[in-house]
Length: 192
Image 1 (spheres, helix red, strand yellow):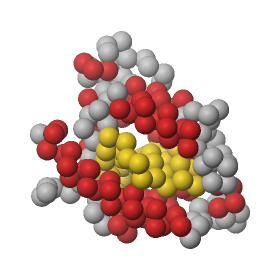
Image 2: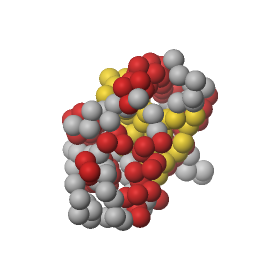
Image 3: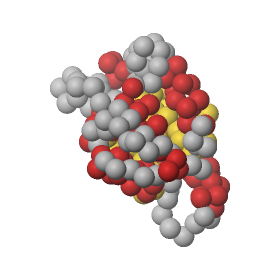
């Protein structure tokens, strides 16, 4: 076990105008806070304004010349675990997420990741699968447990814009966060 609080970042992975990701992420953030085993940070990729791979040095060197990359690196380094809140674009992950993963390297290593995915009928399952493949190249442990939100538009309150969970979503969130906590505790010593 660890004496320091474990930092969980709930990351909004879409940067598109009009996205529903922030509503889903706020709900996920509330679930994580209620879970009570992490210090929770809500992180929005849109706030970093990361250019597409504009660093001259390979990310493995950690020699970031540009301020957006430096801020992103510091944010990811601070985290012990992640919940990626992501949609599916063209059977894949958002380009902004792929860029955010690839622009840094060691900051991801030996940390677990879980997913709250949202979309139409598939609930962004293909996006999660592709993201898992990329994450493993950074030695991230992607979890099996997820919160998959199908037909997300039906869960957005038209008057407030907030996400309204179905009956099963909170139970899935607890199971996912329980497992995420186990892996976070187990992996933290590897980053020693």
